[in-house]
Image (tube, rainbow, N blue to C red; front, side):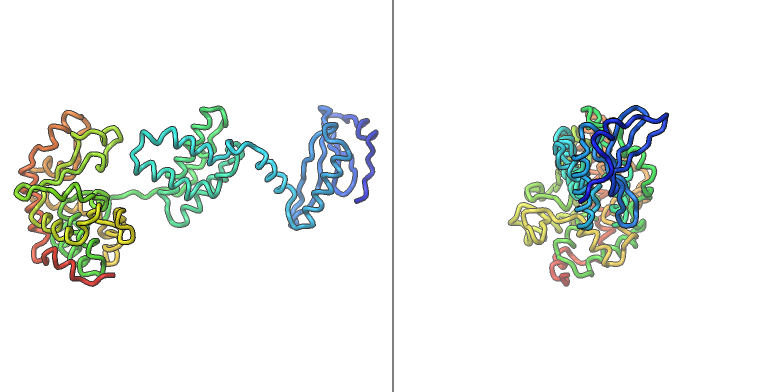
Length: 418
């Protein structure tokens, strides 16, 4: 390409003119900007897809006239190839930076620092959400380059799934990474702080649940008549009978229930599998005792004939050594026609509503059935076995009411499979 009008002498001789910058044109978009401070900067004006843009080549004399012309010629070659030279320069700068400055590297450092104080399940959820939703979008970008619009764009994609609560959680975790980076002096601002106000609000409410015993029977009857794997139906029945959380049922190992006393059956769920704070999960005095009704014991005995040889009471149908997904019970209820009307977790609300109406004086006992234990460690240890006989009576009454007119658990093995 032909050179322009400028010479080295003209560039060296360029002087400031008043308090405003001015430019000296070389040719083919290349020009020298002379600032009032005396600095002389190489710029190139070009058009890309109908938009006028400017590319910076550096300051004179660090970048000579010949260097600036070579950079201009390289940019022209990139334009002919249909690419934006500005984007190419930014990408090259990113590659030249230390990958330890990238968001993903810093996020993994943050995770390594914090994971030991989280439960294994929560830790897996944290890193899983970042790997799924954050790293593909911003993981390879230097953390100092990230702006609020980058985080908001990422959040909008999650909201569109739709997964509004997930978008909030991911943004909270990205924010924590920025706070971690700020503590190490890597960034000065947290772009996520201004993003929270732009996120779609979470609509919180109680878990959908029926509130009468007649409705509860209809839910279970409809679900058990819907084609599904027998293990899923047995899991749903045991969930309803025990008023446990769905995850406790879905991830139950056989060793917890295989040697339950036949005359005084009590399922002892370890604290580490209950919904507790991390330090409480290590406290065996917070194990949850579940007196089992006759019908619950029957479900376990039928289940034993199906899955008793493996480690999990309710295994994944494709991976027997892994637990079933607790979503399986929710999908079964949805197929039975109860989408947004009754969810697996709703059995707890159903049990609480019905039994509190029948026995208002037993409110505290019912709370203990639901594992709503006090924060105080001494009180928790004392209450673990408190009212165990009354809890057994209430759960047996609940089982008799719920399964009135229902077939035995063994009949669930004969139903149609999905």
